Length: 281
Length: 157
Image (cartoon, rainbow over all chains, first blue to last red):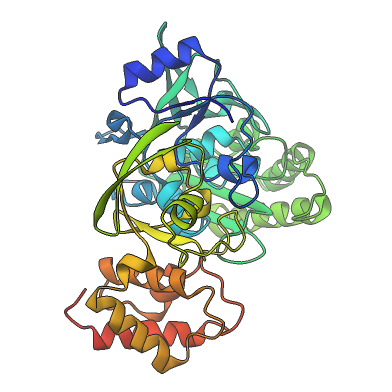
């Protein structure tokens, strides 16, 4: 059995983090599955556990005119209840896991788990979400796309804790989210697709497309998005160019949930559907 | 070992325990609350569901360290309420119980729903029960039971 810490303040947590190599636990809905023991037997965690649940300052939700900030103890259901939350994220949260898991699991926990199939990740990528990370040495900000480096791999040092997530608020006129799974509830995605755009007078002023579970991290291509952003007229060969870009970027794997060929085919079909229904009109 | 204090079925309790220990094990072994069932042990089936501050959680993936200062209600505490009796009668009327293993979790999922939405429609009921598996009934009778309870218990929630 590993050592456990249950700090009551943020400063206390940072101090523990600075002095011991710990594993952070907020909701625990992923970690308890990963490291659980048999009934009645305590789990087998690889490192001392630092519980974050008693730190009330991490429950903070701040809604500003241009951004929303969500603390590390905010659960998936609490986040889904934020009225100003962008629709693309609200849709993903609504289809994610099950009510009981959404009541315990946290939004930032889903990020830090860094699964290629993490359901909140494609929406957060297109929303250009940023993380605030703190240690006893100071604070830094990092874009979500830079924070996640690979399956289960994040840019978080042993002395750091993610304090909050900031989502810029934009007036997205287009929003398309699709999760493909075995069943509606409590299913891990085979793949997922999130796209948002701002379109005024036939001109796209902002666009974000992100695909989940079709590569080691979420796939987003600024090159493909720039083919459409700011253009008054969409060229007829744009779709072919976009298709070529995504076709070369998507690199799914075969696993117990799906096959690489299925994932790639459906992802490109969803891209084509999005392009036809929302962009090329 | 650390001391964890929380409210369990309306009583303040404290326990000396390892914080990694699962809530389902604490409830069943330390408090002998065996109405809390362990099914899958990984948060998929909802048989171990309890209420934490009136919200449904899976006790099999909740470490006891996360329970500090929470208000936990298991089926044993809920059965003393009038709402339980309305729900239990509705489950019996609709034939929503066969083997009974999922029933404590189902009842608490129904209670969690009715607590925030006293007259849910079918979609809302199915969504609220979506994390609770039943291998006997095929779900339709359970959905019907929640509808009956919402009608018969009008004003209680």
